Image 1 (cartoon, helix red, strand yellow):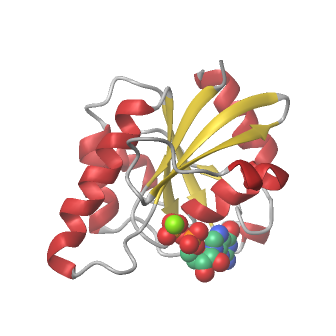
Image 2 (image 1 turned 180 degrees about the horizontal axis):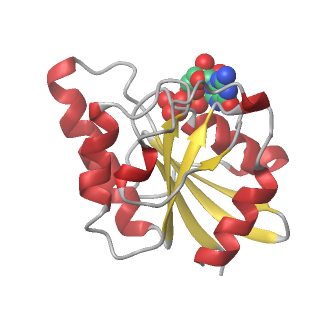
Length: 163
Ligand code: GDP
Ligand code: MG
């Protein structure tokens, strides 16, 4: 069975971009599985030679501020429950935010492998934004650029080591 990998983190860090990259040509297989909330997406994907089932958490665009945190929590909880491994994504350019810390506080209680990703790290131009990332409690982040496809070999190695 394919490893189930959830991509979680605050809005706009690049979760869906990574999801789409790893799903690639298999995007056609994206579907709403029975009982799955409208805005949690599942799809078959691949990294290196490893088959994955990817879980994207999304759908915050239309919600009001009051419901954002509850919605986010619900989506993240469901994805965490279902996953074998969790990719916790932050934005290397913006550095650690208070919302990242809220995710981290929750994820530290999860007894599943968690890999911290510092996305938007293309061309080493992230301005030291990951300095505080270690303090989130998941070790040094793996720098990647979901948009440009950089760091995918390191991500593969991290997934291999953690799974
Ligand atoms: P999500 O809300 O976490 O799913 O984030 P999205 O995947 O929708 O991406 C949010 C924004 O970040 C979009 O404008 C993306 O094009 C941009 N983005 C995603 N990955 C990267 C990256 O590696 N580098 C840069 N510079 N931008 C990125
Ligand atoms: Mg998204």
